[in-house]
Length: 340
Image (cartoon, rainbow, N blue to C red; front, side, top):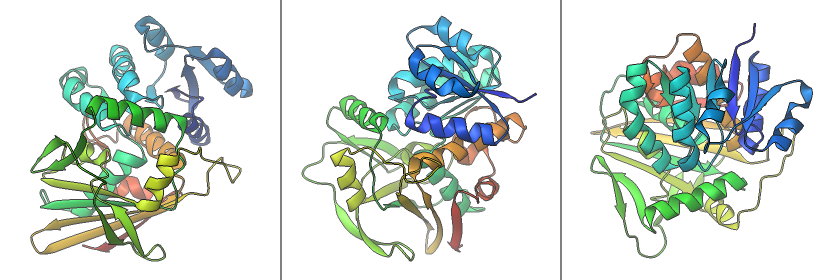
């Protein structure tokens, strides 16, 4: 009998990719959300759905009853992570989310770690393009190193047309920061008041992308996931200027193939440095939202198959064998170890 995986926010943009990926992997998606009409529309192929709200713990408990794991795809995650994690802990089933919100991920590590470990339940936040993929790449680049001086993660996106969820999440994060910026430096997360535009510089991506202008201190969820298990005091993320400009315009993604993916392509260039030695790993693929689905589903598959390295709260690189995990996604992501 196929294992049942509850997907909270199943009818959202990323949630739909997750549902499709689960079915292709032989799992039985259990559709969860607060909008019954949207759930019914998605369940026309015979899938089961259950209405649940983060404001109603009883509805969440009933929704995940009988499921083998839950994947949270519903943002803003500042509102959904805690209630859905609590339901997973009560049901004693693994929890994975695709949150890119720095504060939501930090809350998960801060407030859930002890109880999840005590319950023996695996909780993997940010198991998505931002936060999860970068962490897997940095961990792979580290190899046998237990520490490094710096980690740089440069995102070379051809474009970035955000979903409504991304726009809403960005609004929530800005409100929580009260206009401050955030970076990971000196071994800690630092909130600060920045003046003017973000600093920009030239980044030499591997061919065919080549040299591009990027924004420095364009801080993503990697500043939470990477330091959660790797001793790297400086973790810096960068974004191509063109993609950041698209994000500000907030035009929604448009599907260009039968899988529902957009034409967006990405290159993630990771460099870690220790002393005079530098290691570099590069990943590339199509559509940052679509790629979050195989990342999240592979995480669930490995946890249920007993291939997780720990229980409790852990990032992708700590929970799994990072190089092997990336190899398992070779149909979706091309990964190249350039040096190291």
